[in-house]
Every structure is written in C-alpha cells, then in structure tokens.
Image (cartoon, rainbow, N blue to C red; front, side):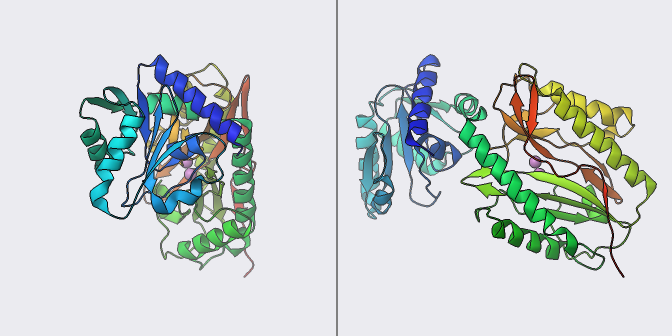
Length: 375
Ligand code: CO
Ligand code: CO
C-alpha cells in the first residue's frame, strides 16, 4: 500500500471529523488503526493509541519496543513512547493529549474496539473530553474500497477458490469434517493466503449443515449428506468469505430442491445490487425467492455483510439497513435454507458495487455439484 493512500485517508478522516464536530478520533490496534496508518499492531496488555486530530498531525502512543515500525513512514506522525515502567504510562498519555490539543470537545472512538484499558488513560489525561462513538464516520470511509483494496480482495477470492478445488478430491465417505477443514487450511496457505485467516473454515456434513455457524467435528461423511463449506483467504489484511454446498452421492430430492431455491435467491440478490439502492432492498430481493418457495422460516439470517479488513463489517445486507449502496462497497450475498436435523444449503459470493450492478469476486459454480466417489 502506498503512503499516498494513507495520506489521502487521513485527509478524508480530518474532513469528516470537522464536518461532524469532532476534535479528534482515538483508535487502538485493529483494522481501523491499520487503515489510517498502514501499521499493524497487536492488541495486547500494553496500550497503543493513535490520535487523529481534526486539525494537525496524528499522534501515536506506543511502547518503545515498537519504535522500529515507524522508521519508514513518509507521512508525519508524532510518536510518544513509553518504557516497560508502567508507572510512567499516564504521564506519556498526558503529554500526548496535550500535544494533540485535546483538552475538551468530542473525541470519537470505536465502541466495540476501545477497551477500558485505553479509555481510563484517555479520561485521566483529559477529564473534560466528551468520548463518543465515531463508528458511523469511520465505517462510511472504510466501506467504499479503492482499486488496490479491491485487487487484494479479488486475489483473496482467487486463492480461496484454488484451495477448495485442490481439496475436493479428498471429500469422500468416511472422512471427518475436521480432516477436510485441516486439508483446506493447508491448501489456503499453500496457495498463498496469509496465515491469519479471516476465520476457521466451516465444514459441515449432513444435519450439521443446518447450523449456519457449525464448527468442524469428527462426524464422518456418508452418502446422502449435504456438504457445506464456508471458507476464506487473507491477502495483506483483505479477506474473502465464500460458501459452497455439495451433495455426497444421491441426496433426498427436497435437499436438491432447496439448493436450487438458494441458488436462485443468491442470483436475485446479486442482480438487485447497484449504486443508489438500499442494502435492505438487496436483502428483500434474495429473501423473496426463498419466501415464495415456502421456505422463508428456514432462512434464518440476513442476506450478507460487508467484507474487507474484517470478516463482518459495514454495510450489513439486512432488511433493517437503509444504507444507500455506493460504487466500491464490498459485501457478501449469502442466502441459505436450513432444515433442522436434515441439512442446510448456503451459497455465498463476494461482490463489489458498480454504477449499474455489481461484480462478483467469486466464480466457483453455484449449482449443487454431486461429488462422485469410486468404491
Ligand atoms: Co462465510
Ligand atoms: Co459471510
């Protein structure tokens, strides 16, 4: 990632903070801090805080041992280092907030990221600050991806698809969900995914596939099972998240039928995507197909979620989200039908919004494919 992109992002953040009456945003390690600095820090017992004032240079508070990460930045940042002596940390925080000109006014944070650890230091340093959520501001900036971000997501999709293709021949009666999941993880890394996968793959056979968040077990595959696989790769912090469902040998005709309804719902969802429509209208388009087929009560989740640096981020493709889609937004389309104790089908694609439609980053066939095995 070029630093000019980082500079552009910091500039956009400033403009948005000013427009919304914020003095600054304070971010701790996670996808937001990485997005605005290009730097990766672990969330750990030592507090790290990036402060982005609406006016002036960003401030970073971090342990001395992380100093080297700042050696090649070509944008300005004012770094405040602390030592392993914890008794000095508050003083360093105080100095940093003074330098950032933060005595009062609105300080924006991400409520589901910032911990009590960082909050206490911030409150102690500037008791008059009004610490509030900056989530809408930050996510509206992050939701629309740039060309380079989309290229990375495209690569993460390509690698995930190669990894699955290389795993399919191992899927035969007698193997366990855990065995297939471990093979798939190996293939993901082998084909070039970064090791920090977006999530551990879901591999669910038969009745287990009726649980949308199934965890691989030692259940053995038998003929007549649905095989649901939900997996993704990571390229430089950008994710793919794909689901395909297969049939092991001959399956019950009703399971074949629901697979076809889900395929149509997925297609309807993707067709409904374009700039200017609401996220809820996309959910509605996919949901309608399943409802009209009589399986509405078995489609038990939203149609999709935003995807990028996080496996779940804005915009959520739910019936309640009135967010207007814009070109460059990226999210999943993943309708499903889950028949308790029998099996479930989900088909999940990753798409990018364009002016007049969407581009799918995922291309694996969506029809129910029957896995054939030789005795
Ligand atoms: Co998924
Ligand atoms: Co997903």
